[in-house]
Image 1 (cartoon, rainbow, N blue to C red):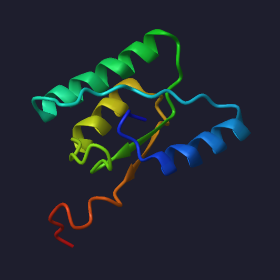
Image 2 (image 1 turned 180 degrees about the vertical axis):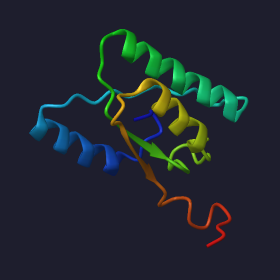
Image 3 (image 1 turned 60 degrees about the vertical axis):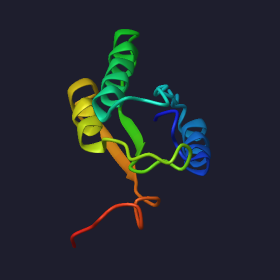
Image 4 (image 1 turned 120 degrees about the horizontal axis):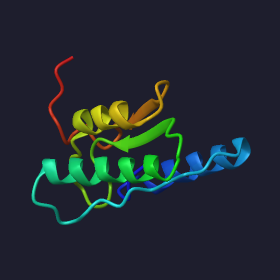
Length: 107
């Protein structure tokens, strides 16, 4: 997950990981940042660092619009980075609760 994760979501993830013996890694993202590309690059660098340390990255929890700070994250690009650097069976969950009312949806 990233440093912008919603705390309640992180707490649920932490509880599950403790039960399953998994480890949570939080990738620190810069704030303020200059662009979505900068956020994506920091995220991808974090994934590469974890992989180089031998981590088997199997799950990512990403916020679409973060609670604090209230910014829209480039989740499409971040998911692509997960696919490139995570395990082949890696799963990605997007917390979109703060997206409602913050973005346009075409359903």
